[in-house]
Image (cartoon, rainbow, N blue to C red; front, side, top):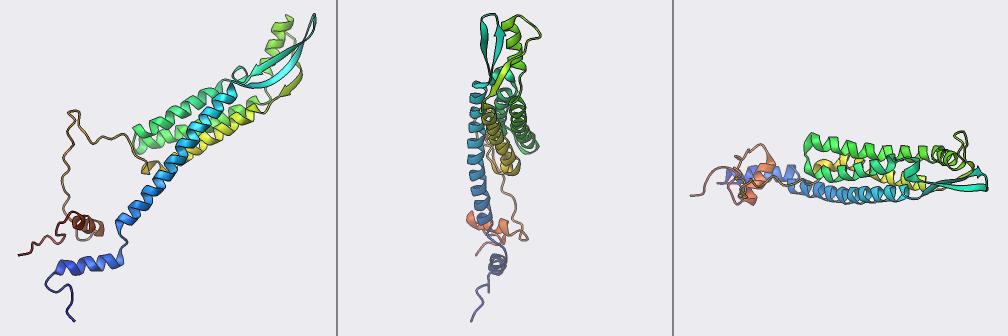
Amino acid sequence: MADPGDGFPGVRVIVEYVTAVPHPRIEAAASARSGRRSLAVALLCGALGAAVALLASRQRWAAGTAAVAGGDYTLTAKGSEVTGVPAALAIVGLAALVAVFAVRRSGRLLVAGLLALSGAGTVGAALTGAANRAALDEKAAQASGDTAATAASLTHTGWPYVAAAGGVLILLAGLLALRYGRLWPAMSGRYERSGAPRSRATRPVDPDRPEDLWKALDRGEDPTGTDSA
């Protein structure tokens, strides 16, 4: 039986590479799927985490009473009055999530790191503020007119922990950006300022690189560099 590569030396080379090396398109498709999934999860976690942290910061975190002339005066403190750090870091994290798509390579790693740090900082600040009484003591001093007065009958709500959960989501988005950010799209630099697409020169086919052979075949070119008579 005749060898299918007789008279076509390039065919034999291509067949050998096909049997030995996986198709680069398969690997590229798998990477693209991973990139799309991680991107969707990161966007959801980052946006939801920032919204949760901001919402929780506007809620009541603590309550107490202060002794005044007419009896006990009820005091309450919102999260933003206890600490403004979670809300500020949530905004920073949201901005970093958007900025990830405006940068590439090392810049993307730096922005992804900032996103992760924003989430971690939100968690730490929210947990620290969960038992903070400084805001209520300040209100007690104002209500009683005594700078040494402190709040009594302190109670705390679960909203600080909700803010911490939002920080965890932002942190997760940052970790995903650090791990998979290289697979995510960026703002296109394909077009020049004039609006014309940049010309892309075709790289010569390297017979030692199977992916070059596949790409040449996809373009309808002869990867061996020989034209049929």
